[in-house]
Amino acid sequence: MEFIKLEKAVSYSGDGYSGMDYPSDDKDINFAVINMNGRSPKSGYQVNTECKEMLYIMNGSGTIYKKDSDIIFDFKKGDVIVIDKNEYYAFEGCFEAAVPCTPAWTSEQHKYID
Image (cartoon, rainbow, N blue to C red):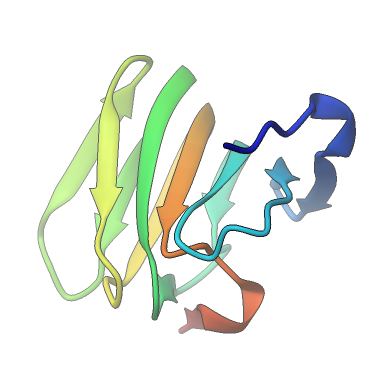
């Protein structure tokens, strides 16, 4: 069992987003809380080459776009989104989400494309 206190969370921010990563030695799963205000990425798409992400929308609403697809999902508080590894996507909206990833997310496997 592992217990990660809020005081150990690492805050980060970028252009239209912010979040808190909860550090863990577990390589099978990790956890973050993200806040989005706008589009991410600003242009193009993003992809995780190693992990599957699950987002529980805690507050707000938005849209997720899937590359090379007409599929668009509008989401709101209480919805859950599952993103498979190697799935290209972009977010737009103003929302807060709880995000576990498996295996654990790393910046090395997260890519942006135009």
